[in-house]
Length: 401
Image (cartoon, rainbow, N blue to C red; front, side, top):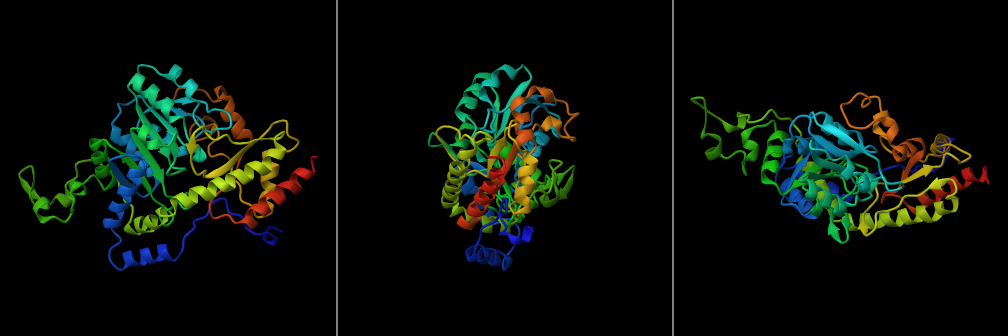
């Protein structure tokens, strides 16, 4: 039955001969991080209005490095929304920090800025908020709160790139920004990749060390420089900086293949955003006829973004369930997803974490967890894909009218 219908993927990489040619050129030279990686770091950091960019193998890796590199003391509190993605909170827990949870605003999927100030204590050191599903946080308000309370403001922009608020890059409001080049995202790095962006040189250099095993040579402009490598002395022993480890690091390096691929993708960023916006508007127009059963997403005022997916929330009063709608669509070869973690404090891996907040305190996040569903909204969708989605939903809804 499923194979009778055109397949509509939830996410899809869109690439062509230019990306393939760029990858082949790298394969004929070196796959190690090099000039393409540096160029890509420069381009993406500019999009976030930051001085430094550090490419890694995923957006999650970028966030883990960002949190570790700012060096907050153990048990410091970080305010973050309870509707989120696992590694947003995981990056805090793994660094012995205490998440202080806040609910999201209805239908925005972003942190409710009106609830942030009341959560601040003498232990609060930062705010970490995701542009969840590609919608934009009220960064201007968060910046005011952060400045008033001397807090670090961290942007998890894994779900979108090139977004603006009142015509200004979202990164302009934040101390650190991360993004992701996963295969389903607005541009991708041959399936994977991520980046940390900051104007704080010490944070950048700490992250750069941690990215590459913690070894000294990772900070050199040329890691093979004979002059730099062989002027090191360890406790009276002449040594090679290639194997001097200043930090207990990781191996989170990206590849030159990923950067070369992503540089070509970057040329299409504005077109990708535009196409995603068009699809978002078409979904909204179609689904507005069923607003008695479905809550539609509300894009943040004065924002410009490309949504990762199209989120809806099925009302508890609807004559059908989220699960029933998902199964119906999946049987017609239309991929769907729930809204990431939902209320993360109801997830098995996060029930026992050291945090501020209890699972039953977050009404909006619970509504999303019970009824939230993501539909495809990517730039790889064709008009035939959209027609199949809307026709299928029309058939489903007709049974209840």
